[in-house]
Length: 40
Image (tube, helix red, strand yellow):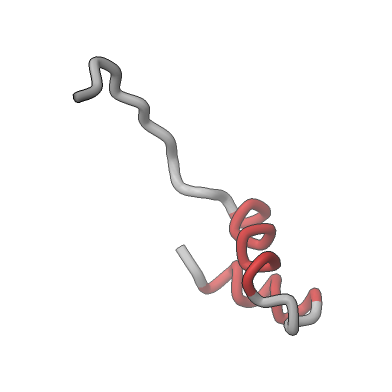
C-alpha cells in the first residue's frame, strides 16, 4: 500500500521519439519522426 500518489503526463513528441528509438532501431530519423507524430 502506498501513501503517496505520483502523477505524470504523457510524453511529448520528442520524448515519444526517444522511446520509439529504443525499440525500433531499424527506422531512420524521418520514419521515427513520422511514427512519433502519429502516436499519442
